[in-house]
Image 1 (cartoon, rainbow over the protein chains, first blue to last red):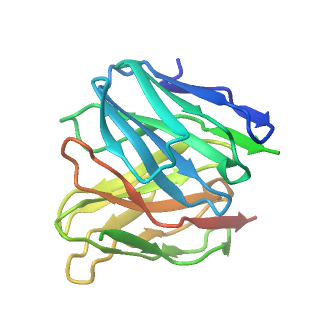
Image 2: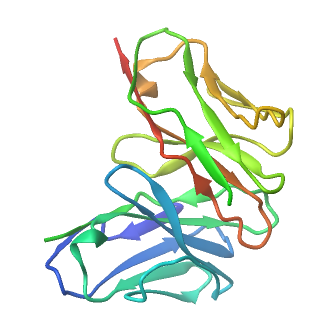
Length: 113
Length: 113
């Protein structure tokens, strides 16, 4: 059983398009995150939700909009895709108060042409 | 602000060699420290962690000690295997409601038979 899953695994699209990435966790966690990993493998936090409430919103273009319909899901919608959005996007989750460990999904590799 | 600095890779070793990957941090408070590992094509997995000064985290033969006086958390393993080839990330977080992870740039380890 996959703990943190992401769909799709790969996404290739044209500049200017709008796309979504989905994340689901079945660990019973209450906090979820989106991280971006660039071509040099550098990882940076983008957003976090706790119990469907946005708690971290780093300096990210407003073309990126997270949405958490419930505690088990955190989706990322990206409008007007740009070449620089090409990266691997990782979802992670954590249970508040149960240590600081975050559990990561397998990643979604987004390529913008 | 808080930051994590890791040694540049790639690190190339022969099987059974001794491994050290250096990690130093800058922190305004007293964070927890982590090592995450990313195997090719996969998401990140927690390798080990330490929550306070002088704590030693260990797992799968890897060790790291939280050194407040040198603000370091170096990763070591006495005898590496080919299966240890991966990218290793040092990270810190303060826990709490957000538990934002701040990552180093990652160090690629390649172990040759």
